[in-house]
Image 1 (cartoon, helix red, strand yellow):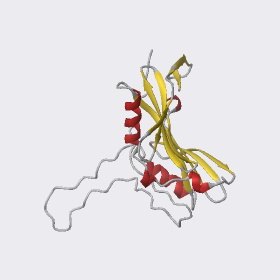
Image 2 (image 1 turned 120 degrees about the vertical axis):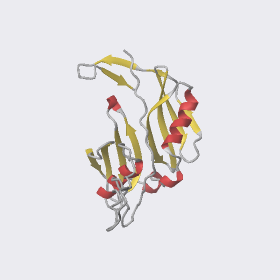
Image 3 (image 1 turned 60 degrees about the horizontal axis):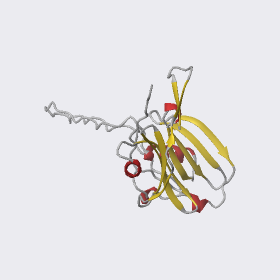
Image 4 (image 1 turned 30 degrees about the vertical axis):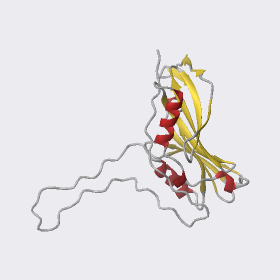
Length: 211
């Protein structure tokens, strides 16, 4: 049996504020249908725009920033371990480091951790308006690996004043990690292809992929 986990499409930008008084969160609900004014005899109504079931980076960042006042984001990762999709968000306030795992569909916080103050915070946060879109990062990573490659997950983070994407790519039952400059999409490094190990499990899925 041979399964491949296809990449879920993630879109959008997210807002980050450090020391700010507030952040405007993305509205997770669609616009309500327009109600005809009194005396209007037309039967037509305006339908609400369709919305993806998957949270955008903007929305998951808004969850983090809404929970921790005056915080900044260090990294956002699309975590696909064992086929369970979730965002993992890490960020800082002036006194603490916080990490949360968020369900990509419901926005429910699945896990929360708190740690001490991080040192040299300015070198470990970034402006999301300066980075390329995750779709583009994934496309570049796939092109760097091969025509049949698919992207499994990605992480966007700042470290030592540099902002990078790490995209996990699967190609012909092998995995490759591609690291990109998140500002311009330049490929920095590409790992040696590694064979995917599959082993049977006793749970309902029957298979676990160690990636």
